Length: 57
Image (cartoon, rainbow, N blue to C red; front, side, top):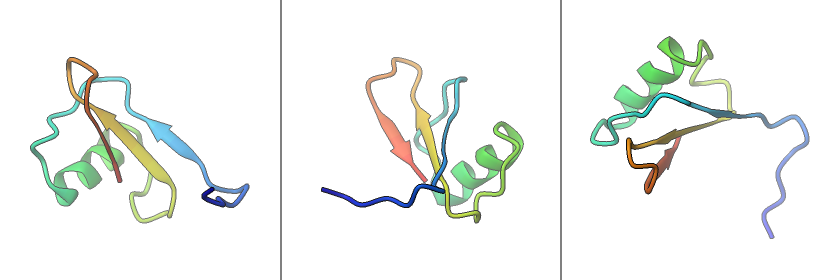
């Protein structure tokens, strides 16, 4: 079991994301779309258009 701190937040992007982007592109999406700091230590979840793949930053 993975122990996660109670202060950890998980942000899920509702619009589909281009998962071909690397870490820098997903960090830009976290900043622009979710309006959050990608270096905050929280999880950012992105899914493709078909919703069959996800990437977590």
